[in-house]
Image (cartoon, rainbow, N blue to C red; front, side, top):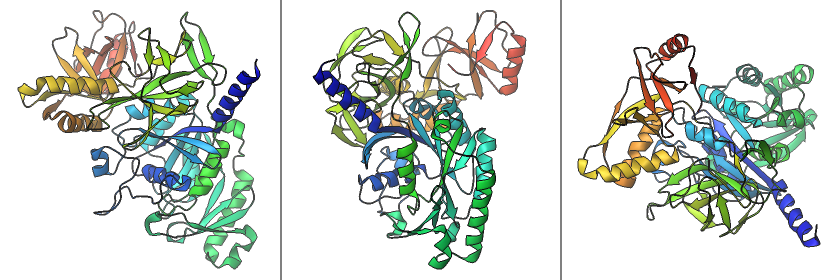
Length: 535
């Protein structure tokens, strides 16, 4: 190896080691978008944090861009943003948290090396959290847990720890512990050194960083900041954790055997900086990724040794309404990316130039001159890219296909003005490519319908058709609540009464069922056929 090559490899290895690429997962209203804002605040990327649901004339969050998101105060699309924090380069995938909008979240998780699971201190582990955690387990993504909203009345921390373990079937290990809760939430104890970090609000609504006073646990009583009852509870809990709590090791965390648990209030910024410091220390930098060679062998793509490679995990059209463009989001898996480089497009078997690469925070774009493993870049998509596409300098492999989850809602949709059929078809096709909805057709191709994992996907579809394509639509929901991909000859399949057989966009046969009972009956009635829940 030449001195120059060794220097290039060393720079690539150092840049990769700096990266932390992660997604935030949670149930709606657990505080995920607020936490995202506060991470940007502590990185210095924004000076003032905006509330998700600001008062009239107030700020809106920097990470949400679609008008519908700002109206509802929820994250609908998965945005990607990069910021520097101390010696680390953070790539944050802000995934949708709404219970009715999860397929985009599932795909985005494939681009993450770790995940932060945000739990509401009052509500504990909720349905959406369980689903997303299951996807992390499927992808072997290590998860850090943040119990949020300690500034509001909540459940006892020990109860929440127990629920995390029982509901998610993983050991939980407390890295820090709250001092009080609700109006008495004063700070956190870091268990490793027994030091108490007492917080003071410095701005209304958590718009600025908090003041911190650090004292040993033994001197907490003299601080005058907590009541005798709170002090006694903290000592009791810490003693119990020392005796019966789960030990923490980074190796077990990376193996998915234990989740480190932190306590904070993202709204007031209490505990946010300590959590971010711990995240940088614990979370993995980008590692090798599994792929399939052209001859069918499984191989691993090393981030340093393999020249540039990436895959498309998300498409998004019309992020800039003035330009009506489409953006392909790429997760860089290996090598160094340089602006305008020419790469192999594996599916199309042709070369493409990666022109006008950019990074984004909400609608603000900045041109990317170079990027490294773990980074997320946006490329203007002139119709060349599809979700799951692999690109590289060398060719010869494809990253593992992105999972597709069974739709649970089905509908027919049509434009109210038949004169706008062309714009309707264009918009529907674009959003199907992005994965906003799935399009399915009858076996004879005479009828088409749209399918989604959750109801909000239909709302987004109609919203975007109205605002981006100027097409008003009527949507008629169909009486099916679950589905499965069918392996076997559809001609010999015996469907139950409340069912329908269709094809998806890849011409795979899908069976729609009125309810889970019908699905069970179909399985029992067709032992020679296989019904799969994941495509």
